[in-house]
Image 1 (cartoon, chains in turn cyan, brown):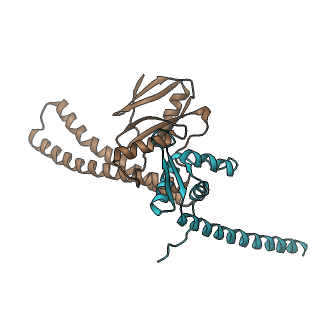
Image 2 (cartoon, rainbow over the protein chains, first blue to last red):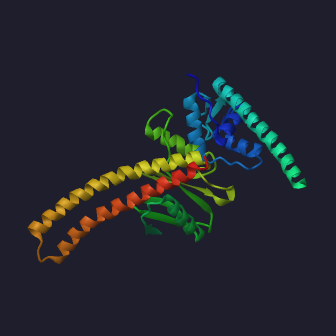
Length: 116
Length: 186
């Protein structure tokens, strides 16, 4: 049976995005901060748990391990992770489109009501 | 400086550690309820008490523990000490915010781990309470005597495990409430 696609958490979504190129834990935090313009700062415990879950799921893999550096483990998104990310973006697009459509027509209706 | 204090609630513990730090005392070690403090600049650090998750990953528990510490330290924090399953980290306040768990999903998992640990300790305490009750009944029926001190000690020996069990049950209920509240934000 195919894995059911449920909504990704923000953390998972931004971790996957940050791992389009090889990156280490601290790099993921920095990249997420940067692309969300400082809104989302992932805590180390949250990141650690999410990275392990993603490794177990096979959505990311260990890319390199440097025994001498503090920032030793680099990760990279896998084929499976990429597919999941694409599916999530599609789902989010649908979400956004439906939201905008309905909100725009609702706004129109409300204006008409006021006119009457 | 050393201070003895018992905490069941890690959030209260964090508050207290941060308050001590604001007064110029940075916590550097913990053993059996005794906290060691060293002078620091007032408010130099932000403290976080952690019950880390060692799920997944390979290697021994020790290796994973080292991995976790290294991971957290790579984000600019400093490992202070660990105690059984707990770990304490701190980060210099000038280096920015310090919070280990930043989304409801990971917080739910954290409180789930805390609840499991407390349930286990609570169960042990519960059996200890029953054992002490039997012990006490035996003492009262056979040895209750004029030695007041001994009577008091026996009575405290009965009350303490019960008080512990009740406190732990209260904490388990609190964790459950917290988890349910967090689930609303998921």
